[in-house]
Length: 320
Image (cartoon, rainbow, N blue to C red):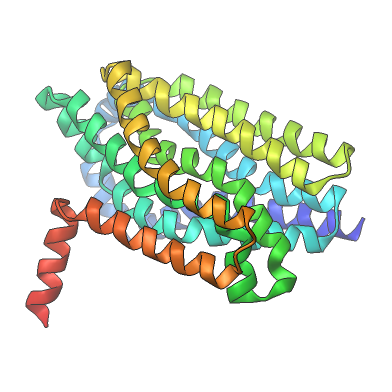
């Protein structure tokens, strides 16, 4: 009961913080610039823009609230059905997976909306979406497939044998993380295409499936099953979210499938070798050495013609 109360308080404080922050920011802005605002604000213009962009308020605000709530639900339900140790393993594995993905995804997502809007106005929207979808697949597919195989040895070598269970959770969650990483920036296209109501509906589905998945695992008294159901349902929903909006953007299905198959074939080759190492019980550190080798070769191949990476490296070299 104590764990349940703590988690409920944590969820409430997170939601309260995400709500009160913009209110305080708005109040601070009003105190400093109220005269400027009153002198330049025109009610007819405001009313016209409110009517024009009402879909963002009506659909995106509750969608964001549902998204924040669904991100806290796993910890809340896991603490209800299982021990705090299980919650700690989940939080550790989830954070470890999110760190590299957030680093890359954040750099892509920051300017994604403005670039997408510009591409739509210029008439090359489908090409823009296809290019970014390909990049997201290339950045995540191989890396997450490798983690789904060596997640446990990774934790054993770097954090000790007591974290082996967290490594197992990393292997399970990596399935979902691929689809989350690809769909997160792509979800901004719902606003560009003014399909905000669909985005709200999908966020509701994500919340419901997360609750159902972990509840089922809790009833079966298996944290691994709970996370497996969570990961599979998340992969399906986020996969649909991404595929649906990409198709709406005008990218043909055959091109989407070809991009996925190209990256899957490369990932399976390296993944198959690493999986064979597990079958013959190769020691954990040897598995990690081979993993680093494969990842180095893969990203060297991928990045050699990447304009953004080459520009970044050229800038760093010029500084030194």
